[in-house]
Length: 259
Image 1: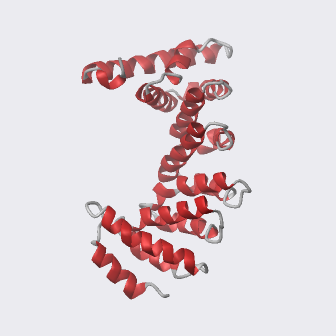
Image 2: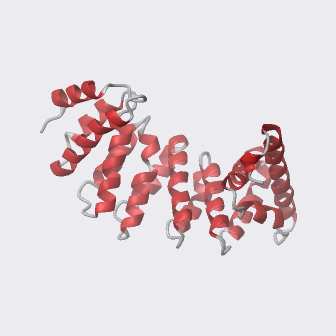
Image 3: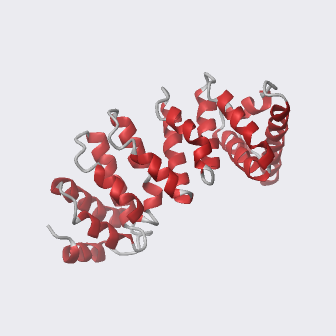
């Protein structure tokens, strides 16, 4: 039976059970580093995405609630990151992301490993984690991200570009300098991700003004043209969520974008 086949009350009870089981094993690891992690492994490797999500959210909560267990939690995650199961490694990265929302330096090494994982689900977990961490804890996360903007692996550059998107939806000025560094990237996947991210931040409240002002300073006018087209299109695709109508966005761009 999957997580969402359960009733609401049963789901809540299961979440508490998962947290209690993981906490109990973390507590034992604090006493004896080699203590078994059988229940934690079962949750981290579960085929049900929502079981795994409950597990990594539980790790984040335990980390906050029990400061005395924090070294043990990091030890547990380091052990599990070496597992063969991609599900386990993916859940480790997501758990590290929960911790990194307030304590990035402690878990930074997990993302440096996860970025280069062989499995796409683990690398995608890095993107998701960078998104949520940069939204809540931007300074260290964005500073860390900068070093990968010119990495020789195009997928690393793309993942970082995608990962910083969420912060840009509320604070575009924080990520636009990083995006600008990618304007001359010739790799199609990086370029398309860059255009996508610009579009995703431009339709949010108060963001279009900041985005257009910054694009006016970019040198790659062909890339900027594609970004402008994406911004206009996004205002139609997300018309139920955009602050401006597509017509208002077009008028603003016509008035303030310097071709």
